[in-house]
Length: 398
Image (tube, rainbow, N blue to C red; front, top):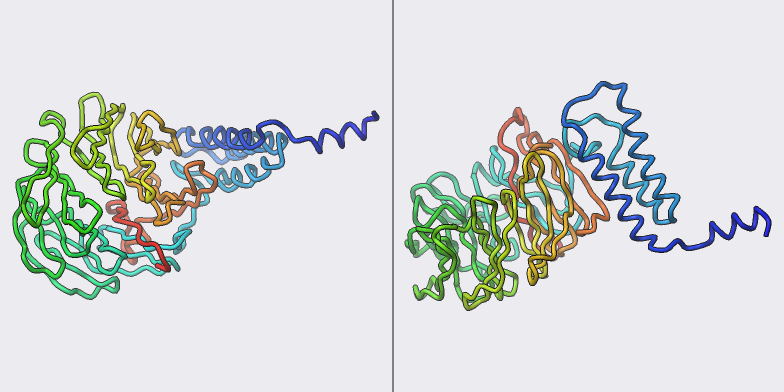
């Protein structure tokens, strides 16, 4: 066999585990970039950094044909800009979500919606918000008021109570729960029948999916109470008074309730079944920032802070020990949301003033959007609090 035929044979051969090589090369490139020192460097260092990062991607391209896709992704992620933290070349221009649905946002300037075509609308100067089922209405709160709005910002009703926060619209659409000072209250979806339910800790409540109005909340002292808000019947109580839950969320079927108790050594995840029996528990190091269960209910996206870094993990709801790091970076991640179809994750990166739309937990694509503070503060200085993701709704045209 001559040299030419040997070269042709080698080029035509399929390397073993080529897809795995592609993913490993991308993770190496991404990790190397994210671990850069978060300080501006002189311009003379730009080219060596870019050359080193792209060199890793070139190696992946040499390993297999799919490696060329990694090279393209690496060029997009590394770029040639100097950044303190975050993904360079993120677009500061108006943006649209990469899939169907509308994103609900709470910024210092008020509550906004971002439509599937990128159109942004300010609903009013509210502080927090919640979607009703199918995104027909928005429940928005500020100081001592709770209002129901249309997606165009038309007010349908308003009630007043002191210190309103954490509104949550029930899956049926007929109830809204919210906190008022140290109490939890429930109001009918038309603004009538507002009443106190119980004393609570400062944790957002969670409605169980279904037509019954079953609500989980953290009662005074730290226990998780699950009650039928119509009958007032207490269904079950879980948790420990010495480790109050920081967050609650039901699975889409209502068969699991996930809570996150706080401990001195970190935080835990507890999974209860619909009868209040604790099925799983696992302790995690670091500080919990946020978590969200996927629309399919099989995995949980979780943000934690460990020292100067933040991590986005996915955790198997049925086996908490199965978990993987999806993305990590220096500084503060703020919140996480799943797209309605479950194909994308939306990650808030407060330290970088960016949102990252991450395609799949295997990170097949990242779409970075920058200058969020300015985008949701038109005409302002953009120096206030980083915009908070309040929800991504819904299946359908959005």
